[in-house]
Length: 478
Image (cartoon, rainbow, N blue to C red; front, side, top):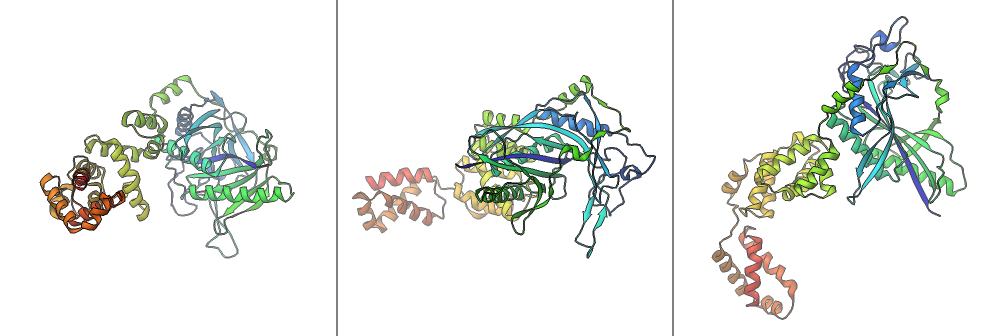
């Protein structure tokens, strides 16, 4: 029998509030260690937490964005455990009554199909501090700047069946939190972290296998690698007759292996109880309605609009709406191109993204602006230049050599569409290659590409490809 993988994810999102969830401490990233932790964050005797309204609003916006139930009354609880970077000895979180209940998010797979992933809940909690190991020989340092930063923990249903599906889901969450403006989603800075619960069962079985949780994975690439590594390890264990023990594990990217850190805790190990310093959180219908009215066009809605309005495939549309910046960039390109949506999509997803990836740049750092790329697409569409010449001009734009028309004029790259000039060049090539002409006319159709190549080479790639093909065929068959 073959194995089926079952994956559920817990994603921790740092909310983009200016102050912490229960204190007025600053949440800016990169400050000197231990300069942004107040007495409230440290849980000193006699202090009282005060809930941050904006963190609540952001959680509501997320819930509405994934079509989830919003808990009209939610309760904060103390989750008791010891970490060196958790000075209070407990974390204020939510347990039985979270702020966001059941919802869902549709992901687009590589074949263009969609799959619905259930969201079990999303609850507010405070972040812990951070243990530092690199700069302290034989010791660990503690930085409590992060302690008390508002987190939204998003718990999925175990609906994913491969590492690729898991990555698609994390990317969809990353996209929606950025569209909503509730987090920058910067995984390198810890603004978004993922715990991956992985188990195996025989295909066709209903009962889940024993899961292991991979903690704190902080990049899309590592999520895929960590899950695949864990699947391989569990499969080897089960096929060797050994039982899987429930555990929390860490992924080591250097060895591409997971290793057990501790046995997995259950909810009762944390001794949850309602926080006596915080009243139940009551959310009014008026507040929810206000949040609804303020929602932007979200990725799923924008993807469908791009498919309907621009005739794009589901996959291309999902790439182009992956961020608000990318979607805005695309729509400017379409406008500047004289409404060439499919050609614009092709140039962004292949040429532009390829160049950005190679240079390790973000879209905001692109040397080629949306307006410039749109004008380049327009010149291809109106036959001023060919697609091949377009790549030369794109490279010149990337190197900041001027604007599109300026580069075309300066380099003499305008496409030749004059029928007489093309016919004259074809006649010269036919006259220079009598043997190939004879072979083509005797049935070797593949030689047509030879003549096209000779013509393009002689013209420096400037001939209109459509005209060249039509005229060449007539001449060779005439």
